[in-house]
View 1 (spheres, helix red, strand yellow):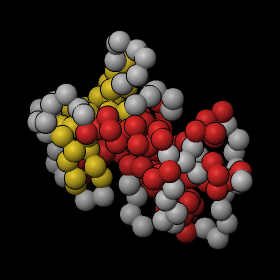
View 2: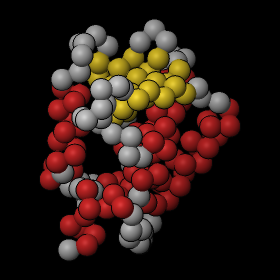
View 3: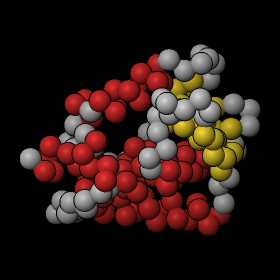
Length: 163
């Protein structure tokens, strides 16, 4: 399976979730948070340059200067950061150079939290290593163990892991 932005995100969020999703065990349709995230993408402010599909990635928005990733919450900034850096690398490999911009749209906050990123050579190498690690996890014979976190109860895979 080709690595996707979702797999990169899940790799940082939960190796078990990464394995399950990578092996086409998709439980996102049961998740209220996933439904909210999809609704946010459908209701974005403008219709210019939204949801661009390139090979195995889906970019929320691209402008002259930025690749923009929009998230419902800043609950897992590290996972979102690496997902965005992965998208920047895919674009760079195609000759498209952009900076990254992550916008967190919190439902109870009036101000948007925004993070800006630039892809470095070091991060490019780390992304290549991460992609190899993801392939190894997905192709592995064992499902990664449960790694209890505070966010597990909100995860779309919660029932699979705990019930």
